Image (tube, rainbow, N blue to C red; front, side, top):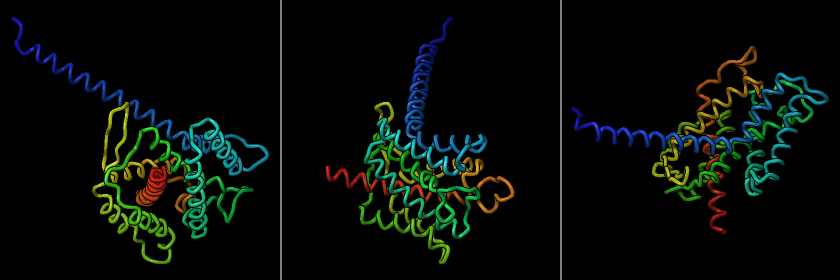
Length: 274
């Protein structure tokens, strides 16, 4: 005797199976778009790993890394993976990153112990591309996932906030560190802001503050990989590699916020002009 519940159960199982299959497909699509957006960072980390173990002729390792980053940047623009407008944004981040690196190395926060012809004030010029790669990811993910912002605060509030976060990286060496106050201010300013994006034509959304935390965490993971391959070295890593302190996530979180706000502000300005 057949159960009268079996047909409905089968239909329910089919619905669940279809939802799981759709969710898996969307996850794969999302991962693929993320992977395409991370081409520049992946090349940098692959170069760090290869140059750490392969013998390099003619030039020191830091100089080879700079040449690889320059060649990668040219290829991305020529191939169409990156637009000229995105290149302008990335160049700004390169300069911002170099200024921060020179100051931090001067203050002893970290060091680049290897030799190099292209080191300025103890900082190899390739290091600016590590900041630029964050901007490259943001620009490409923005374009590929059709990112939009809902209830984004006015620029007169966003620009001073981003500037204050950046300045705190310098001023906390001479004054109190206000990063937690700034983090609380970010939550307050962006409390009602959502980021929307599309995967396979289907819209999704999440709180903007949550996206900051997620990107900051993955950059911290990438930082551990970079220090493992001696991209730079913190004082507590002078006698060998150690996991980067979890407190650094807050620093990367604030850096991601600066990066995101600059990209968002430039996109808004460009959108108004168009």
